[in-house]
Length: 187
Image (cartoon, rainbow, N blue to C red; front, side, top):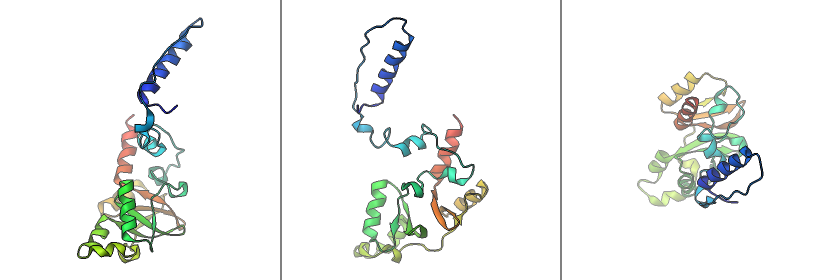
C-alpha cells in the first residue's frame, strides 16, 4: 500500500485501538492520502536519517557525520573526463553545490558551483569542457579519527571536509550534516 503519513497515523491508531480490546470487533479506518507525494521524503532512507527517524550504527568518529556515504553508493560523484554540463545537471538534480571527482576509489578533485562559474563565465560553450579543466586538486582531507575541532577548523578555512581513511574516500561532511547531528542530539 502506497499511502501517506496521514493514512499511516490513522492505521496506527486503529491498530492500537484493536490491541486494547478484550473481544473481537470490526474496525474501519481510512486511507486518505497517497504516498506518491512523499517519494523524495518519507520513503527516502537518507531523508529519514537526516531527520533522525532512522538510526545508523555509530562508529564514534567523523564517519558518523557523513550523510551520504561513498561505500553505500550514496555520494554523488563524477569523473574527471565528464563534461561540466553533465556535472552541473547532476548538481541541480540532487540539489547540491559540490561534487567529489573520483578515480576509482580515490578522490582526485572537487568541483563546486564557483568552479563552474569561473570556467563558463566568458564562454558558455565551455560547459563542454571536461571537469579536470575546472576542478580543484589541492584537497584537504581528514581522517575519520581526528577530533571534531579539526572539522570545525576545516569549515572555518572555507574548505570542504573530505573524509579519507588509508587512501579510501568515505564521503564528505557538509555544515548541514553537522547541524543535523546537533539538532538530533536535542531530542
